[in-house]
Length: 567
Image (cartoon, rainbow, N blue to C red; front, side, top):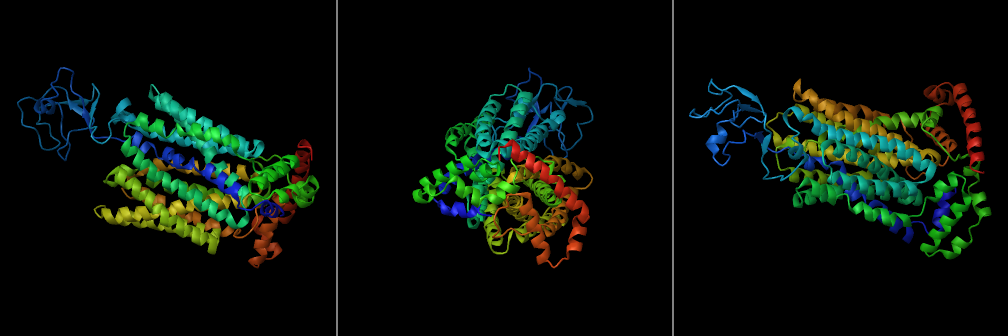
């Protein structure tokens, strides 16, 4: 593993790393806004049926003559009288005075625009019989994130991190801006789906490009920085949404800056580690020398040559392969173990996280205040997570964050409904733990997978996370059975998934693996440290003979890939 030494030779975490990391993480401020944007653009204001056009809306009594009341004395949201109930005392319950028949709203709705002057719910009447369409818009956005994780994760391993990032910035800018001018709901959903795809690519490539340019001792700092930027983005969303409550202006405001990100992303330097794993030593040399020049290490950069790189990266050139696919995650035993365990962690974290953060109006307080509280809890949670990651390791941090989050949500399920302060506090604590879990899983996954398939592995992990975010709203429907059932499910899943961390190796202080063989060597080292015999190790992963056969099958594939890349 000589690549870390090459990074230290050309400046380590020097001026180049500081500039590029800053520019790469800056778009994450607005990515956080896009992920939970629908809490504001699709907020549901108080509403009731609109009476016929000849009704004098300025006279409250004439308007009230059309509106039945619910059990709490409020106007029904989805029903109106078939004819005005003039001259009758207004009922104080669900009764309509025994004379007025009701019908669904035939002339649309009147919305309370005191908090939200315009939302997609108000513009396209996504209430009553059409209320499911509101969730459809968010689900389609998450479907886009799922597709983007699969597509752009694979493309980044084939084409490089930089090219995919440039494409993603442009796609986010164009699709987000078009969504702000969408003439109807289907067009809006289509552009939101495209935005979700590109934002997934930005999220994955941001972490990978930064981690691959940083020395070992700084990777946890970079992962934590990315997490904090995302948390600051939640504060930013609350402030921007409060200042710009109109949904079209808000959508436009969080999308247009991506045009600027697209312009300056052309100055990014591609990952030299990805170049080397693809067999492009000439481009590897140019990238390292350019970084050395920016970091003020011109002599060290000039001392590098093709011969030096061949000698230093002999192992990568011998065992690495230029192209990789998701099939490799299941073909190789070592990668298969990683894939299965990490899939459970990604799914559980996202499943519980979006179960909490996408129902801000359900807390009964100001939606802007709860957005700020949810963003604020991330700051101490991620700080504690960072300290645990750096001192105790990635594995205990991942296990503790998921386990504690699940316990908080489960306790919340048995707390009485009238204890709103206790319930909100537990939800905030659980959300903070899940945010720390997200922070850790991004870093942990990037350190576990080898360079040749790292982006594909991150993409598949993010795909499972999106599956969790898509399934999460469906679980909320179980509240019709019993109000606490969703919380029991949201809590049980992360508790169960936390056990998967016991089967993963620790990466604290370890160099990034470049090849599949590096992963297998790390796994064998972990088994020896745990005192397991070779026979027991083989039984955990399958029969030893089958492992060897599968390992041999990888050699021709690697050789074929190397030949295609001109190695």
